[in-house]
Length: 432
Image 1 (cartoon, helix red, strand yellow):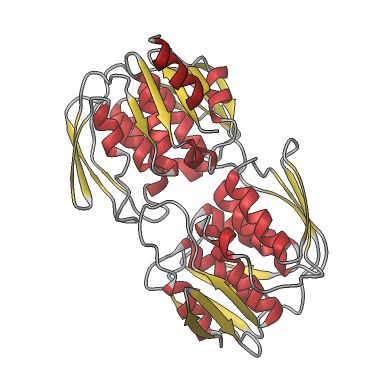
Image 2 (tube, helix red, strand yellow; image 1 turned 180 degrees about the vertical axis):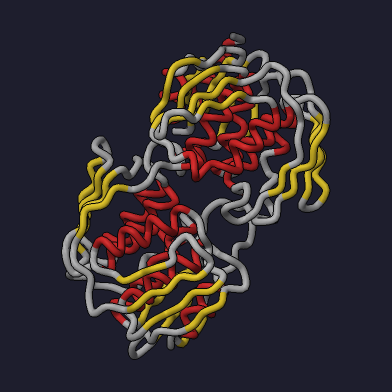
């Protein structure tokens, strides 16, 4: 049965919300558990569709998996892996599924998998993953949409990434962990999720240094033991909740955050007139302003402004005074949420990789459809402040990255509920 979110805008938010573990750290960490010769316990893993997809992938490969979604804890045991070929239907569900490539090559010396799927926000080619692994001794062949990699033994190498790809950096780190000799990754991605992956692997006996910088060095080890590890808080979820207060002119406290991971967002929010208090080391208090100033925004790899918060921030700009430019440098198709915002009354014009935002005084409720994960969050934020009722479909995207999103917004005072499309059809037929 299909569902939609029904949101009545104009309700002020108040209170506090606790941020869950980072999806973009949890997924590679789950993949990395394939490298271990002993059981691993991963804590603070939110109940998300993407998490369940990744768990289904490693389970299909022969790993034992026990996920307590209420406790947000995963126990894995990959000692007796049976396959190096994950199911094609699971691979096509999610981009991050490709992260099993490095671990499988390290464990088996071969892997066969299809190209991954996920949000349609850009091409996101995997050539950087493959070129780096080729430098480590892997030979790849391609047939019928499948990639097969083979190597007698992964060898340490010096790899330079043409672009600081997060996924490529993660795959290479995992592959190099059990490779012979040392590997150096230059121009590596430096996101906090990279640091968390390295922390997880090091806690099991890996030898990784430099994570969080542009130069990462990995000295291969013979095997990894078990470990117990807690995932870092989700900076994108934290930013989404902070922006929910900014767009509605509300005051809330966001708990379980690492503010160092949010510096570019907090700086831009302050430019718009939002008041932010970071006096608590693990919490941020935010007070939205009724008079918002439009600013220019440009996404960049970390530590620049994250592309995963660009759609939500655009919602704030749409409600601000003046005009501003939003330039997207990471994904070429990350303006798909604009149509929904325009349908609600926003004045946004897309010109290639740049959007011109002319602030408007208010938005109006309307039926809209989400087409990707962060775009869905942007539409929810717009609905929270819009006059009237907004109905949002395409919730499968939202479920990929936000756990209990509507319940937590409701706890802050939002008027938001989940309805089935069948119920909506009955209302339309009865004229209600």
